[in-house]
Length: 340
Image (tube, rainbow, N blue to C red):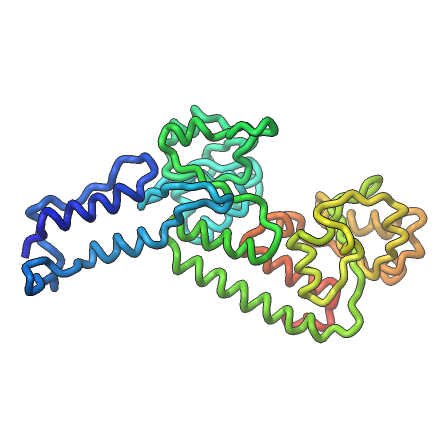
């Protein structure tokens, strides 16, 4: 049976409305045979074809706004992707889409292993718009769309018909899960995204169930840079949430966001455990802390409870943050989480 031109026009319009300025997808000509099993209804109209159903399903899962609340129109096919944040780049690779990535940020190029050797690189804070336009991507993922002046760094790309999706920094594990699902929906991998998020939740709940059994929580200082000004965090950062999940207590829980800590404040906090994700993530960072003059009376130093945590794992908020959660748990409570 042949499809009516009216139905085909409706499908074509559906595809066109989901486009982001790219060339509309082609449809079957009017005389192409309908999929097997298609039949007309009693009033003379044709039944829904599998192509129509698939198109409607895709359209229903494509987000209409990005994670910053901006309206976007995502193409039904995203065969050329620019990813200017390592969290998205790592997720796309895990979704099996590394071959579609045509450009990344410098941090992604340095930390993500599955990228093509000659992949283009673009600074998200100073994007080379002519380069992006020459790549003709279907979508650009970025976490830094605005300059300090408030100017949209990607306005020229948007005006050229490129879909630019903003994903602001996430502050909670729930935000991270929502980011994952958003990206998966954008690239036609909704079910895969749901699986990743579900697996994360299972891991988080399993870890939290052990954390709730900790009757005497250890206090933890988490360093991202050493003296003279220690970079750490308080509440409102997903890493603080992770400390709470494993049953520990952040010594800076009274602070909000990322903070700088003077040496005297660290000594006064007297943490039971010090975790360090300083650049290098090796034994040198641990030894430096253990041998700091004046730190010999800190409980963590006295008990040799100073442990290195992988820096990139902490700072790339995607599904791999669960590995960091396990790493933190094993460092702070090795006996409780030895089988986790």
